[in-house]
Length: 100
Image 1 (tube, rainbow, N blue to C red):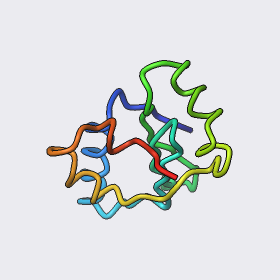
Image 2 (image 1 turned 90 degrees about the vertical axis):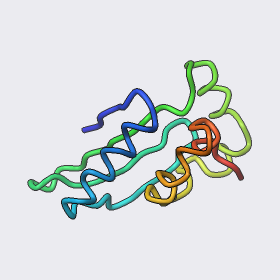
Image 3 (image 1 turned 120 degrees about the vertical axis):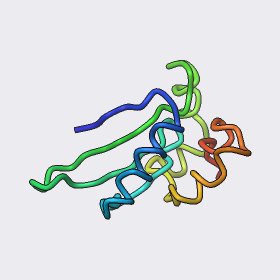
């Protein structure tokens, strides 16, 4: 099951809320088209909390056709706590941009 947030701030605020309750993601991936936190619920079901990195389908499609995505379609791991700490001083789009 996946839940999509409308922007990066609420996704990271929820990460912090859950962390304070000792609920940590099992994996955090910047796929490029999305930034995703993966967890398991108490019944063992996989849950994805994510935010789209692009404002349009066209932008996402362009990214998925790019060499960055073609060379690594899974994405790169990231630290949501570090990202949260940077959110006040760095635009969300810059934090979600996936480099090679």
